[in-house]
Length: 393
Ligand code: MG
Image (cartoon, rainbow, N blue to C red; front, side, top):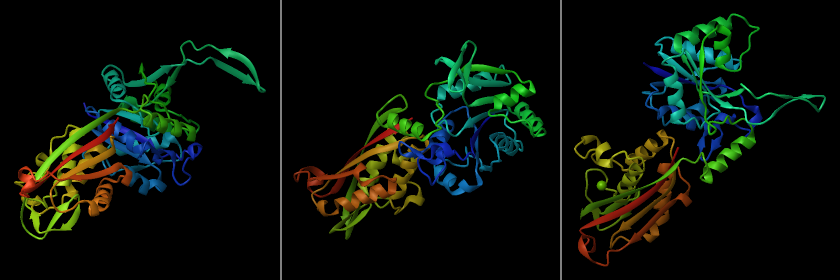
């Protein structure tokens, strides 16, 4: 059974103008664009085979920036949306129809906190129903208003709040949307409404309170604050460590943390032998349990001969972003008798910050000698240790 996720991101979201230069789905929450978080939730789910995003024609550049971490293995080329949400969904379904999936999950970009269990519940329900809708009960008492006064109380019995992703048998919802498009008087605000109108059965599955729709500027602020404060949306914090050594040999400079430092010797290795960046690459890979630098860039591979190690570090950073993760902090300790690191420390911090897209305040570089003891003390080599702290959804 193939499952595609169709993410609707074509709205203008004027209500959430926290950043007047961009629509809300591209505003940052806790350091990453909302859409990047939404995409990560689906890209990381083992049951989702493809993702297609419907965007506004004005947002091509913003979309490009928000989706760089996702490869064409999972992310199909974006499709331009229409005037209404319903039109955008239909255009997305038509784009999928060339190589139709068995099932489709239609999701609003403005719900970045859909978790894996919720997505699984929707997919599982489609085994026995052509449609599945995640819902939550209404807990507030509902009032009817007339002329600014309370005109009555509405019973909550049998009422639910509809969320997304809404899952459907692909051909059924495509047929329903095509039929709805033929009558211009019809205007549906979600896809289950289209399914209801067409007569499709839609099962109710349990929604998730975290999966809230971020609509107003205040919603965005609250979500960002909850993530920063380690609230329900914060996910987990992981710490990884790394260690590396390279031998010193004849030469005139060493590469340390991306900075070339004139020296009486050089570090030997298959790549540029930058021990600092190698240790930090391993620390980052450690946070997502994704092997080590040697597994991704084997020394036996001629492509990495003399390679600049910023490639390795950048790749590790992208692997974290692809899982919806955010690097909180990195810390490298260089262990050597010479050269002196102090004068180059800030250049090294700047180089790591540039490679990983971090602020200088998130990047620490320290150094110590080995008190002339052991191989480092005899200046046979230089060692480095690193730790990285990462927040994952
Ligand atoms: Mg190494």
